[in-house]
Image (cartoon, rainbow, N blue to C red; front, side, top):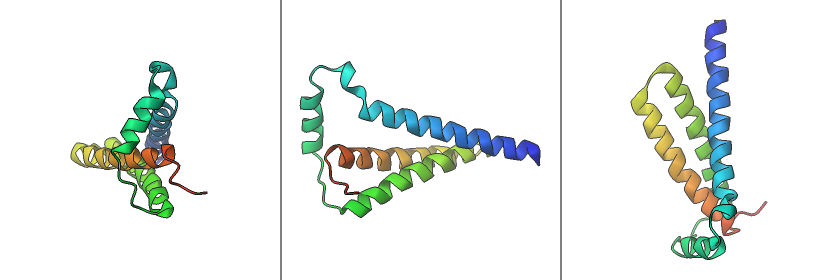
Length: 107
């Protein structure tokens, strides 16, 4: 039983590191490109922001949950489910972060 709880704890920590690292990378990558503001504006111009603030906030939660579940699927060895959940979380996270950058989410 203790071994299972250690695996769950490791999965949760790994998820936090992955999601935190991804958010840090996407939100703080200004030092890698001198034309970052121009690049960001051109990226957000191609995105259609037709959803509500609440829907974008839900996307953020879906991304977090998908990464957490992908991490747990990794622990139990379900590679297909891990990949599916990771890709879903990644797509939701990209939409969520684009909405954050475009200031489409209200507190």
